[in-house]
Length: 451
Ligand SMILES: Nc1ncnc2c1ncn2[C@@H]1O[C@H](COP(=O)(O)OP(=O)(O)OP(=O)(O)O)[C@@H](O)[C@H]1O
Ligand SMILES: [Mg+2]
Image (cartoon, rainbow, N blue to C red; front, side, top):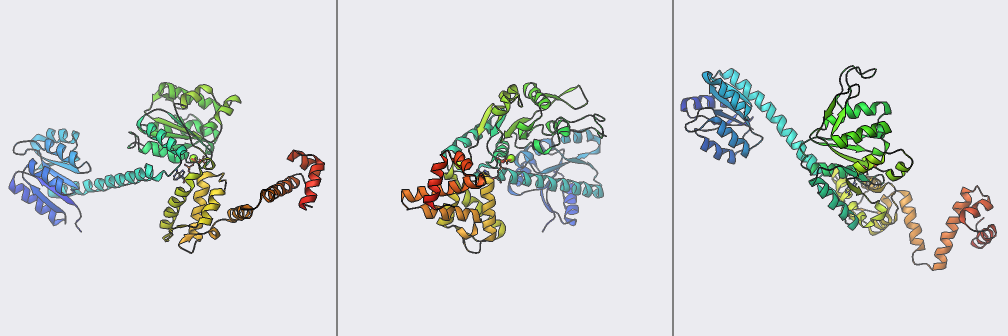
């Protein structure tokens, strides 16, 4: 395989041949042309890594050619060739997108070094670009799975939020997908080329939160040996995700409020206001309204954050999402484990549907991941699910189809046993917890045979 694909644009036939020969000797694959017109055509046909372009072509300058080549192929690295007397042309060309320049007469040892360096940069840029598209793919709406109308509403808000630059507040129980939604918004917004930085506030020691977020001047606190860049600065041009914003200490709530109002902040140990072009997405699984009542969260900050509000419903409120999510996770983990699993048995799906996933989608995902790892067939079955899920299902099956009296008996028996257990066997206490008289409790225990 060739080391790289290089285009040479030079109107002087002798120069052109010399350049081509030198490059080919190094195992590069070279295409040549004498004009800008030829170059524009070739770039449409081959994925060049580098274009070596002479500055003075017949009827135009190399700058015009480079501009058009980059428009067609943004990842191309252009290098300009110019006469020694006209080095200012090279400077201008570099200002307009050329990566480097070579002066004539060409010193081919130096020339080949320039080419090698350009290729290294080329490789890095391609890697970055591939990483970026894999991130975009990972957080594209195709990986945001749902079937319920409740989540359709959330999806509508997500696409609204992606088109706007407004602050977003995402609330929802743990594991409902707040993190995923924040990233999805970023990677489909106009800021997607910029950074996405996430700060998990509860995981930071309180003394470090301020410098983490806003940065610190050298010597601002013991141990600050050099200037520290904060997340607000580092996320400039992109999105800053403040996870668990309900945990932000009150003094820092004031600083965040100031930023949201004036787009300004100051580093710790400084008084000079700095600006940053960053979009804020905040999330919390805590009840901010309640925190406000307890005076732990500032109402003015709450209203500033609450511009686009997305409440992600718990999985219990949208059971219709369970089947498509289960399929999605089966595919994901089967392909990771290199297993061929086609689906899930009716029984196992029924067990999942009736389980109250308090850890929401994260818990469902972990359950499926584990089941895929343990499964030995081509269909996930009840046996692959954790014990508590199986037991719940067996209990459901036992009650299914039986008479109302029988169902009531099972239910009351379970409730009474639990209440007795929690009351350490003290009947008066258990009766109180159940909201019935002690006499009624004794009667029911006797008739149900509870000892
Ligand atoms: N609609 C969805 N489609 C596919 N995967 C999802 C969906 N919602 C959540 N997930 C997955 O579930 C897991 C938990 O989601 P995430 O980390 O976003 O939850 P969270 O709300 O931020 O939870 P916490 O409050 O605990 O931080 C992740 O692996 C995420 O990719
Ligand atoms: Mg999260």
